[in-house]
Length: 273
Image (cartoon, rainbow, N blue to C red; front, side):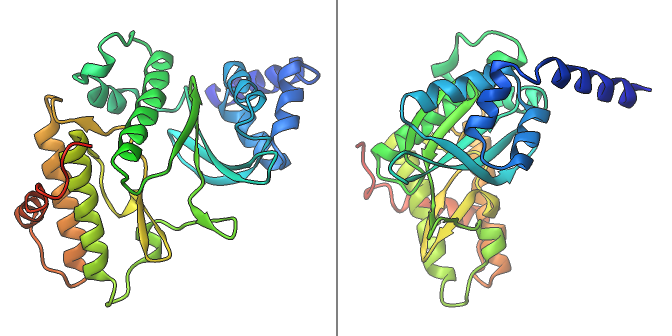
């Protein structure tokens, strides 16, 4: 009965809003009908208004299609009036993992005043990802350039070639002649973020790295924490272990301790910037 009731409420919701301003905005900004349905199933009126505000400021014209979808966010390829591609990440309010998000924000000195409640936490998470991307841009790390954000909507540089989004490392894999170079890039990213900006990714794995040509780009940094966070050491060691496991599977035998030592060796290279 619960599923039937939810379906009835959803039908009622869209029937009431069939000719509403929000419905017209969805038609305006979402090119594909299927994406409009995805959006309508997941997002609310305030999200539509956030997209409208960001679009009016010239950040993009339309959202062309879904690049990736998940429990906590949907990523769209967008295009602006000059034909430049942008990545628009929209965090869901209803389906985001509240408890998982909370442990990365609690203890972050930058977000002491975040109010309790899922909506406020998701907004803080979006703002946190934007600020972390700013820090990474300042130290010239390979991550998407942040462009703008509002509430639960984040606009970033689109990482891809020929209009196609770059694949994640997990899907793309590595050739034998790439393993050592890719490992070097990962270690340099970790060292640069940490020694330049006191930042720890806190969820580093082959699922959060894009491969564009022969260059790696590091994404999904909403959970990234400063080294002052009470769980910073735990998160850092987990990142190192994830890196060790992945590259060991590809013939480069490493332990978590090996990765930590390789990062430490780069301390002199990456000073405060």
